[in-house]
Structures are given as structure tokens and as C-alpha cells.
Amino acid sequence: VDMFGAMAVEAWGTAVLSFVIFGITNKRNEVLGKNERVGVPFMIGATVSVLLALYAPVTQAGWNPARDFGPRIVAAMAGWGTVAIPGPNNGFWAYIVGPYIGAPIGAFLAEVGLWG
Image 1 (cartoon, helix red, strand yellow):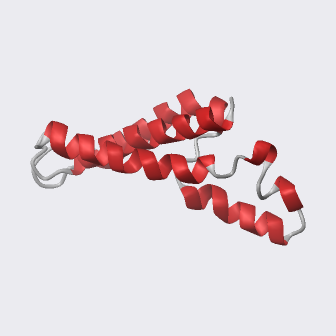
Image 2 (tube, rainbow, N blue to C red):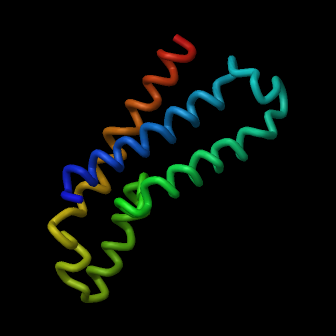
């Protein structure tokens, strides 16, 4: 997959995860109970599991810029050079930009589409 495709997959995966988190943790959502809401962590974990199964074969499913960029910085300081930054095909930016695009979109859609 090219870098723009990887960015799109990262944005989409982050948007779906953000949508689920904002949708299921909203105080007006009473599907999993009013007070304790013990099912919320399970549902978020299930969402992550499904997204990983779908998108990890494509982009390794980063969805968190710190999860990708932090190890790249350490690898660069350890002497890995261009393998760490900018990485293969100069694509480290896709794992930073994608989640920054996807998370606000998912949050917006949940807040406006479900609760707006």
C-alpha cells in the first residue's frame, strides 16, 4: 500500500475507534447501563480487536502517533538512521497525520450523528 493509502487506513481506523469511544461513553447512552457501565471497556476492547484484525495486515494499525513516532526516535538515536526516520518509502508521516485526521472526524460524527 502506498503512503497515502496507509494514511487513509490509519485515519479510517482512528475515526472508527474514536466514534465508538465517544458514542459509548456519552452520558446519554444508556445501552450498557446508567451508573456503572461495566460493559464499556469490553466494547472498546472488542472494537480494537476487530480493527486490528482488519487493518494490521495493511498498516500495522498504529492509530496512536506516539506509538509509532516514539520508537522511531529511539531507533534513530540508536543508530538505525533512515530506517527509523523517515522509514521505508519516507512514510513515517502517514502514521502521524492519519490519526490526527481520523480522531476528530470520528468524535464529530459521534457527537453530532448520535447525540446532536
